[in-house]
Image: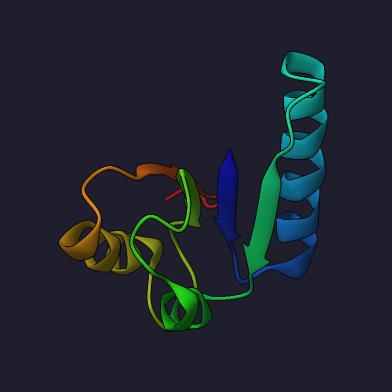
Length: 91
């Protein structure tokens, strides 16, 4: 499977990548997985192409374009990709 992680906090991005990689290795140890990280929504959208990822994990609150705005753009071009939202914010 191919995953994209989008978060403007680099430490959170690294932590999420490590946690996801460890969980995927435990669940499917013989299956290769690709996990790409993007430091903000605009950088992700600049690289985005429909069918590029199976799952996109979006931070809801990012500087500039929000995770919700990124999701709307993704949905315009790819109705099949799975979207996951996350945030450290209490809001």
